Each structure stands twice: as C-alpha cells, then as structure tokens.
Length: 192
Image (cartoon, rainbow, N blue to C red; front, side, top):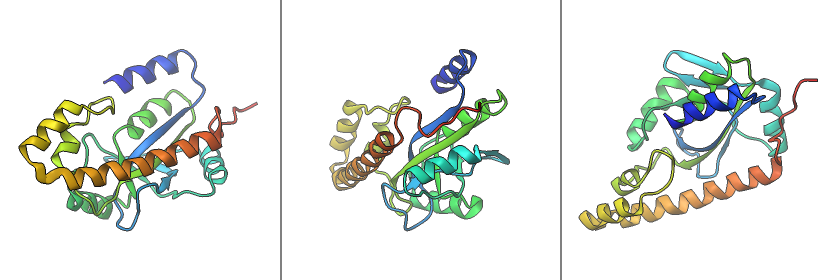
C-alpha cells in the first residue's frame, strides 16, 4: 500500500511526528459535511490507538473546537447509510476513514507522536451513488472517465453525485481553513 510505504520512508528518515489529515465518512446522524474531528483515539478492530493528548488538545484549541470522540479505521469506502449507522452503534465512533489507523499503527511503535485531524465529507444519513465510489482512485483522486461511464449507465445518479460534490466542497473548504489556521507545523511542538 502506498501510504504504508510512504510512512515507513518518512519515519526511517526521521519524521518527528505523524498527523493523519483529510476527509472522513460521518457515522453519527446529525453530523454535517465540514464537521471537524480531532479524535482522542483511533479504533481498528479490537485495537485502540491513543492519539497524543497534548497535540490533539492544541489542534482543537487552535481550530476553535472539534469532536474528540473516536474515529474508526476501515479498509473500504462506506457506501450505505445503514452500514455507517451500524458501525457507529457497534463502536461509538463518530466518523471513519481509511488512513488514520494505518498511520497510528506505524507511528506509535516507532515512538513517534500521532494525531488525526479529519473533516466529515459524507454524512451518516447519505448513501454514496455508485458513480462516486467507482470514480474514487486508491490515491484519493477522481477517475473522471469511470464517473462518466457510471452516469451513462444510470443517469438517475446525477442528483446524488451533485450532492456528494457539494458536500466535498464544504469539507475541502474546512480542511483548507484548518491548514491555514494551523500553519506549517500543524500545532506540533517537539519536546525540548
């Protein structure tokens, strides 16, 4: 996996800390796109990874607050709202992503502080249309040809895809605000 390889490389080259920064799927009903999550822990199966408390608190403070409840790691996109709700009820996690558990799994045994900053993109109540999932590349970019082909096969997806695009704009705008507010160090303070 590309993320794992890149993190191994960064850690072996002396990265002092690891921040998982990006989008997440909402699991708890009522959480709108743009909701900020700086979790105290990441859940992956039966394992729970603790985020660095001080760093997480500095992130929340600098950003004017964020939900601190757990984030859960998943290996594939969550498409159906029923699956999101079941995962929330089973784990208590407020959101899910496909990277934070990998980052925590590599950072913590290497003795590096870890934190996560995620923004909900798709709310728990919303199913993703097939075109949104088909068009998602492993590196997070969009495969426009796959999206268009899916829409040609089933044009009824257009409304759902437009909703996903609007939600993604809101979430990306919040990520940009976070990046601007936190600056290049992302509120990290190396131990002296």
